[in-house]
Length: 198
Image (cartoon, rainbow, N blue to C red; front, top):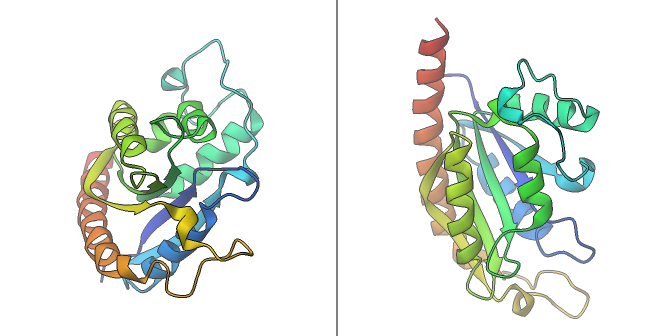
């Protein structure tokens, strides 16, 4: 059997009282049910990157030698991955600034890898995902067609801010198809990268 695919699940919000950690932990548990996957959560709260302002584009940096230490550490973590699941809010018809900044801060380590999106917001985060698809293509990533869209997440919480029991159970079938598609693309791209490295 092939070695497990390393899937990094990125929590794309750092706000207080954010919703994003809830679907991130949920999709992490769903991913762990797949024998092919070794899943890891990456919380952008743990990667306090400055706003990107380097004089040289990350696309010109070789060997992960980014000027900023946090960017170098993040790049090493991104390099490990075969694919990504990005959990994104929708802010003003787009994604969060902190997620865009993380994407902008490294380059080669994202290249030639699959990515899928779990989004939430008033229209299920659909407009954030539309923006992210264009961004990740520019990073030479392959966004899968399937996505998980969670509408009106504030209605899924109890008075203490916790997910109501069974609040996102209805997304389980969508998650299964989503993960299967991500696995297919992650395997195909890993095989291509390995052949290219021969």
